[in-house]
Image (cartoon, rainbow, N blue to C red; front, side, top):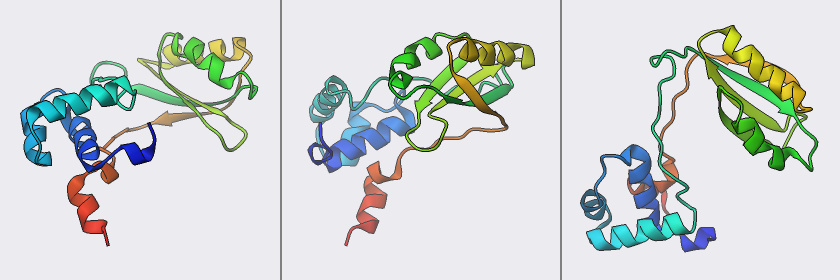
Length: 161
């Protein structure tokens, strides 16, 4: 699916789902988009089948759930293997995300959570055992997210010429 295939209704659906996918009904989204509930459901199914929507997940406050440490590990892998190694990194206990970076010396950003240093240190060791270089480790105090603003129909209209 190319960017041209995503229209304003799709963007509004994506924005609504990013706001609160669990509690957002197709009827509520239909009211926002000026379409019918069945149109919204069909659009969501299409966005899912084309993997624009890759899944639904809970936003977990790891600190409140007993895992106060969030560590970012900036790693370097050989360029040919960096994409292939991501599933193996995700299998490491404590790792919650991996991002493939395309600029700079470090080309993988691994996020791990744990109760203490004893939970995070083995993650770094496993990354080293996989042949990665761990160039930097950063302890994160907080992490907040927001829906992507370009999907918000209200914001998009205000910025249009």
